[in-house]
Length: 187
Image 1 (cartoon, helix red, strand yellow):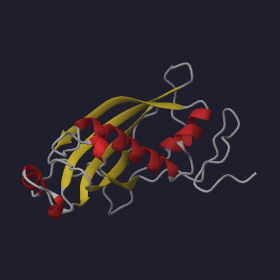
Image 2: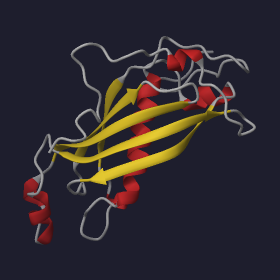
Image 3: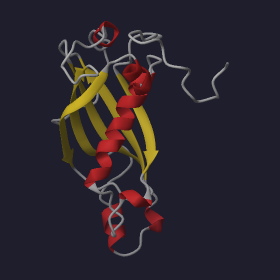
Image 4: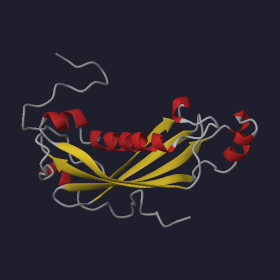
Protein backbone atom coordinates (compact mmCIF):
# COMPACT_ATOMS: atom_id res chain seq x y z
CA UNK A 1 0.00 0.00 0.00
CA UNK A 2 1.37 3.41 -0.95
CA UNK A 3 1.01 6.16 1.67
CA UNK A 4 -0.91 9.31 0.83
CA UNK A 5 1.22 12.20 -0.44
CA UNK A 6 2.75 14.12 2.45
CA UNK A 7 2.13 11.35 5.00
CA UNK A 8 4.71 9.13 6.63
CA UNK A 9 4.87 5.51 5.56
CA UNK A 10 4.24 2.89 8.22
CA UNK A 11 6.79 3.00 11.06
CA UNK A 12 9.69 0.56 10.97
CA UNK A 13 9.56 -2.60 13.07
CA UNK A 14 10.19 -2.19 16.81
CA UNK A 15 13.82 -1.35 17.52
CA UNK A 16 14.74 -0.33 13.98
CA UNK A 17 14.69 2.99 12.19
CA UNK A 18 15.32 3.27 8.47
CA UNK A 19 16.96 6.54 7.53
CA UNK A 20 18.12 8.13 4.31
CA UNK A 21 21.16 9.73 5.93
CA UNK A 22 22.20 11.89 8.85
CA UNK A 23 20.07 14.97 9.51
CA UNK A 24 21.28 18.25 8.06
CA UNK A 25 23.24 20.53 10.37
CA UNK A 26 20.94 23.47 9.64
CA UNK A 27 17.70 24.36 7.92
CA UNK A 28 15.01 27.00 7.61
CA UNK A 29 11.27 26.64 8.19
CA UNK A 30 8.91 29.42 7.09
CA UNK A 31 5.66 30.20 8.89
CA UNK A 32 3.12 33.00 9.27
CA UNK A 33 2.16 34.37 12.69
CA UNK A 34 -1.47 33.41 13.32
CA UNK A 35 -4.08 35.54 15.07
CA UNK A 36 -4.46 32.97 17.88
CA UNK A 37 -0.74 33.38 18.70
CA UNK A 38 -1.06 37.10 19.43
CA UNK A 39 -2.11 39.38 22.27
CA UNK A 40 -4.75 42.12 21.75
CA UNK A 41 -2.09 44.48 20.30
CA UNK A 42 -1.25 41.96 17.57
CA UNK A 43 2.12 41.02 19.11
CA UNK A 44 3.06 37.34 19.05
CA UNK A 45 2.83 36.00 22.60
CA UNK A 46 6.03 34.55 24.06
CA UNK A 47 4.33 31.16 24.39
CA UNK A 48 4.07 30.89 20.57
CA UNK A 49 7.83 30.64 20.16
CA UNK A 50 8.33 27.17 21.70
CA UNK A 51 6.07 25.47 19.11
CA UNK A 52 7.82 27.41 16.33
CA UNK A 53 11.18 26.08 17.51
CA UNK A 54 9.74 22.57 17.63
CA UNK A 55 8.62 22.98 14.01
CA UNK A 56 12.20 23.87 13.07
CA UNK A 57 13.61 20.79 14.89
CA UNK A 58 11.00 18.48 13.41
CA UNK A 59 11.63 19.62 9.84
CA UNK A 60 15.39 19.33 10.34
CA UNK A 61 14.94 15.71 11.46
CA UNK A 62 12.83 15.05 8.38
CA UNK A 63 15.90 15.81 6.22
CA UNK A 64 17.12 12.37 7.30
CA UNK A 65 13.83 10.81 6.23
CA UNK A 66 12.63 10.30 9.81
CA UNK A 67 9.71 11.86 11.64
CA UNK A 68 9.44 12.10 15.42
CA UNK A 69 6.61 9.55 15.19
CA UNK A 70 8.95 7.03 13.54
CA UNK A 71 11.70 7.74 16.04
CA UNK A 72 9.28 7.15 18.92
CA UNK A 73 7.88 4.01 17.27
CA UNK A 74 11.43 2.68 17.45
CA UNK A 75 11.53 3.34 21.21
CA UNK A 76 13.60 6.55 21.12
CA UNK A 77 12.21 9.70 22.71
CA UNK A 78 13.82 13.15 22.75
CA UNK A 79 12.71 15.29 25.69
CA UNK A 80 13.43 18.99 26.12
CA UNK A 81 15.61 19.55 29.19
CA UNK A 82 16.55 23.17 28.43
CA UNK A 83 14.81 25.96 26.53
CA UNK A 84 16.32 29.44 26.31
CA UNK A 85 14.91 32.38 24.38
CA UNK A 86 16.10 35.95 24.06
CA UNK A 87 13.64 38.38 22.51
CA UNK A 88 15.02 41.32 20.52
CA UNK A 89 12.02 42.72 18.64
CA UNK A 90 8.35 41.75 18.49
CA UNK A 91 6.87 39.42 15.90
CA UNK A 92 3.46 40.68 14.83
CA UNK A 93 0.24 39.17 13.52
CA UNK A 94 0.55 38.08 9.88
CA UNK A 95 4.36 38.43 9.78
CA UNK A 96 6.15 35.81 7.73
CA UNK A 97 8.97 34.36 9.82
CA UNK A 98 11.94 32.15 9.10
CA UNK A 99 12.87 29.74 11.86
CA UNK A 100 16.55 29.02 11.24
CA UNK A 101 17.53 25.89 13.11
CA UNK A 102 21.02 24.52 13.62
CA UNK A 103 22.50 21.52 15.39
CA UNK A 104 25.63 21.63 17.49
CA UNK A 105 27.60 18.41 17.89
CA UNK A 106 26.76 17.03 21.29
CA UNK A 107 27.40 14.14 23.60
CA UNK A 108 26.12 10.60 23.72
CA UNK A 109 22.71 11.35 25.25
CA UNK A 110 22.00 15.00 24.45
CA UNK A 111 21.52 17.02 21.29
CA UNK A 112 21.60 20.83 21.15
CA UNK A 113 19.73 23.02 18.68
CA UNK A 114 20.20 26.74 18.09
CA UNK A 115 17.60 29.03 16.56
CA UNK A 116 17.14 32.41 14.98
CA UNK A 117 13.61 33.73 14.47
CA UNK A 118 14.02 36.08 11.52
CA UNK A 119 11.51 38.47 9.99
CA UNK A 120 10.90 37.42 6.40
CA UNK A 121 8.09 39.79 5.44
CA UNK A 122 5.92 42.37 7.18
CA UNK A 123 3.09 44.38 5.58
CA UNK A 124 3.59 47.86 7.02
CA UNK A 125 0.48 49.29 5.37
CA UNK A 126 -2.02 47.19 7.32
CA UNK A 127 -1.07 48.35 10.82
CA UNK A 128 -3.27 51.08 12.35
CA UNK A 129 -2.44 53.08 15.49
CA UNK A 130 0.04 51.67 18.00
CA UNK A 131 0.76 48.63 15.86
CA UNK A 132 2.20 50.90 13.15
CA UNK A 133 4.98 51.95 15.53
CA UNK A 134 5.70 48.36 16.47
CA UNK A 135 5.71 47.34 12.81
CA UNK A 136 8.40 49.90 12.04
CA UNK A 137 10.65 48.40 14.75
CA UNK A 138 11.94 45.63 12.47
CA UNK A 139 12.75 45.10 8.81
CA UNK A 140 12.97 41.91 6.74
CA UNK A 141 16.13 40.03 7.64
CA UNK A 142 16.19 41.30 11.24
CA UNK A 143 16.61 38.69 13.96
CA UNK A 144 13.58 38.94 16.26
CA UNK A 145 14.65 36.26 18.75
CA UNK A 146 17.44 33.78 19.36
CA UNK A 147 17.13 30.52 21.19
CA UNK A 148 18.64 27.23 22.21
CA UNK A 149 17.27 23.88 23.27
CA UNK A 150 18.92 20.81 24.69
CA UNK A 151 17.13 17.49 24.24
CA UNK A 152 17.96 14.30 26.10
CA UNK A 153 17.39 10.84 24.72
CA UNK A 154 15.24 8.49 26.82
CA UNK A 155 13.64 5.12 26.28
CA UNK A 156 10.00 4.16 26.69
CA UNK A 157 10.62 3.71 30.42
CA UNK A 158 11.89 7.29 30.74
CA UNK A 159 15.43 6.18 31.52
CA UNK A 160 18.27 8.08 29.86
CA UNK A 161 19.82 6.20 26.95
CA UNK A 162 22.35 6.85 24.21
CA UNK A 163 21.24 8.68 21.08
CA UNK A 164 20.96 6.50 17.97
CA UNK A 165 24.36 6.32 16.24
CA UNK A 166 23.04 7.87 13.00
CA UNK A 167 21.88 10.92 14.97
CA UNK A 168 25.30 11.52 16.52
CA UNK A 169 27.27 10.89 13.30
CA UNK A 170 26.75 14.41 11.99
CA UNK A 171 30.31 15.62 12.54
CA UNK A 172 31.15 19.30 12.22
CA UNK A 173 29.50 21.88 9.98
CA UNK A 174 30.91 22.08 6.47
CA UNK A 175 33.67 24.66 5.98
CA UNK A 176 32.30 28.11 5.20
CA UNK A 177 28.94 27.49 6.86
CA UNK A 178 27.58 28.75 10.14
CA UNK A 179 24.70 27.40 12.09
CA UNK A 180 22.07 29.63 13.65
CA UNK A 181 23.30 30.71 17.04
CA UNK A 182 26.86 31.23 15.88
CA UNK A 183 25.91 34.90 15.70
CA UNK A 184 24.18 35.05 19.09
CA UNK A 185 26.54 37.79 20.21
CA UNK A 186 25.86 39.98 17.18
CA UNK A 187 23.61 43.04 17.16
